[in-house]
Amino acid sequence: METSDKKTAGSFLKQGSILALASILVRIIGMVYRIPMANIIGDEGNGIYSAAFEIYNILLIISSYGMPMAVSKMVSAKCAKKQYKNAYFIMRCSMVFSIISGGAAALFVYFGADWLETRFFSKYHGIAIPLRILAPTIFIVAVMGVFRGLFQGRNTMMPTAISQIFEQIVNAFVSVAAAYMLMRAHSASSKVSAWGAAGGTLGTCFGALTALVILFMIYLMYRPIMQKQMRRDRVSEKESLAVTYRLIFSTVVPIILSQTVYQLSGIVDVTLFNMAMGKKGFSDTAVSSLLGIYSTKYRVLVSVPIAVSTAIASSMVPGLVASYMQKNIEDTHYKVGLSVKFNMMIAFPSAMGLAVLSTPIIRLLFPGSDYVIGGTMLLTGSSCVIFYALSTVTSGVLQSIDRMNLPVYHSLVSLIIHIGLVYGLLIWTDLGAYALVIGNVTYPLLVCILNAKSVKKYLGFRQEVTKTFCIPLLSSCVMGVVTYLVYEVFFALSHRIYIALIPAILAAVIVYFCLILKLKGLNRQELYDFPMGRRMAMLAEKLRLIDRE
Image (cartoon, rainbow, N blue to C red; front, side, top):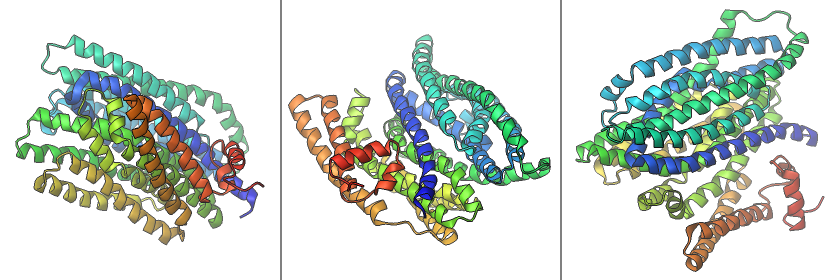
């Protein structure tokens, strides 16, 4: 491939980096506000909050969660053929689909909240309260997903990134304030923890509404460009309504099913944990508290680096679809390889950093709580970051090359094995909540193995191993040792966690960056494709980590 072609192929990574940086910032804001909120509502309230979000997520996925990626894929495919009228007709039809499906799901949650609590989540006393507040959020997010899919399909991630940041900022302020005020107002109620959880869900609703308003305003500004493109359309007639909706269903349904199966693992974990711990004589409060530790002190933290892989997968779809439809196999292979490599460059050090600094991070973020259990969970399950990163990207690859059903099958097979493994560990061992952590590692591991085999089979692609996996792993191991030693030295001198963490994290970044380049894990052109790549290349030249041009 020519250098210019590689620059074009690698440009999607810069768009993905915009979305990835926004996603990381969103996760950081999420962690920051979850700390005071978690302390306000307590472990029981966190358990109710997490259980409510499991229901919310599964219904959101069933109704419209896959819409951004589906619309992105369909719009990019039409725009690659210069069929702009059909591209924007797909967007309008998708909006109708989302309004109907999102509205139906919202009504079901609002009016069925009491039934859901009684039938499935009786251990979470008062869960119907936060569920009713989450109901309108489902409708808002459904509509918002179409706008995000349109912009992503046009290969611009900035509107999504901006809306995500403002969404989370509003979410943070409203969640903490509402949790405090609602718990204070209902302090005499037996459902005081549920009211605290409801405050958190109120922030989610207001944040989503803010993001929708921002996206709609950007859409109005972008509309004249769309109309200008449609006047240059190569196709004089739009596709029929029936053909368009058939395309929407054939694209959306597999993505929704794949995401539904993935989300079911969370619902299954909660259900199995309730059953197993109930049989062993644990009280409802103890069960809810343990689940709160797992969801708040483990899953929230590992979700930060996982957000990078999700962003890269979303940004990869438009360019990959265009290359695949143009039968440019070399370009397609380059984009897939670069996506996987970029994700592994982030996932390996992230997993190692979370493992090495697990207990200090938990102690710093959640003072006064049981940091031993949370720290051990993070140490045990940090490797899930690597497997989720790989499974997410490979699923995006399969969906981009019109193998939409394969991620569904792979997720379903993995879920069946996951159920057997987690249930066996809960019943026949004393692992307790650690069984959920183990399941959270093995589930994405199975998915990425199955996905990798299918990518090799249908795309003829074989991922380079040494620079993609071996060098990041080796660099991360050395980084982990240095990070641990630096932290221990500074903690021994200062006896302050935050004072010890800052130099430890700085040492981790410097050591990893230097090792990756010194071991030639990245070449100059690949470094250019990274955000601020040219500046990093100049710095690497001065440090003699890469050769001068």
